[in-house]
Image 1 (cartoon, helix red, strand yellow):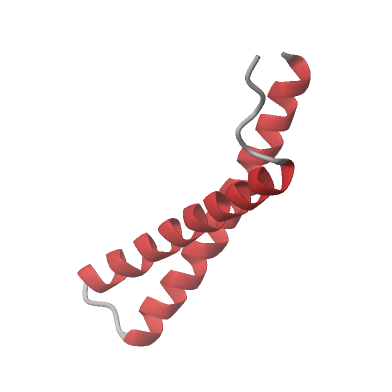
Image 2 (cartoon, rainbow, N blue to C red):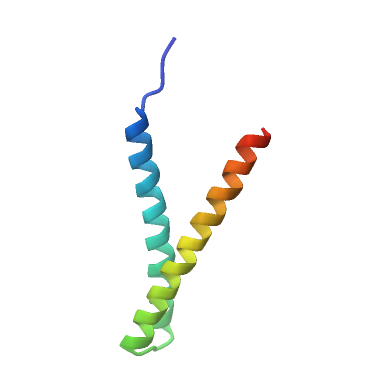
Length: 73
């Protein structure tokens, strides 16, 4: 029988990269939307920071929901 293709360390690394990529994508999206509507540089940086905070909150929420789902499965 074939075992898992990832070690635990590889899995943690991949999960961390996925989470950081998701946070970056949400943050960058906020910054780009602010640029599209003609925001100043300061407003764009604020939108980028708020977008990163929202991305972090989403990752935290989805992680909690995922753990609950695994326990109930």
